[in-house]
Length: 83
Image (cartoon, rainbow, N blue to C red; front, side):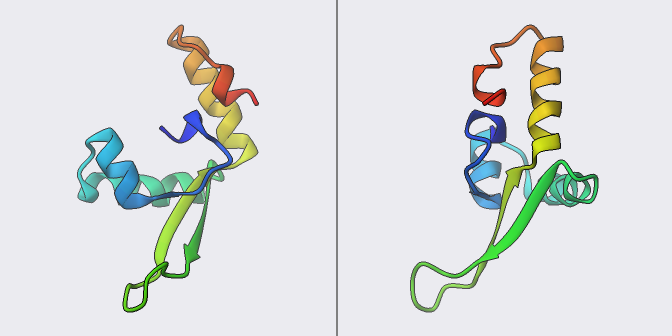
């Protein structure tokens, strides 16, 4: 999902919805991928008053390379992840 638009910031909730991954599985995975240098994360200010800041994620250059390699191994299109 992140490889579809690698430069775009994605909120954890959006990733969970798009992938069908439970938050208890997703967030530990995102934390590990960030620690490995595959993802970068940032806190983003709320877009509406009264809402909390949100954590957003996107692939790093290393993450884009890894996604492209995984896509090649799976014989999937890699156009989006090689940009």
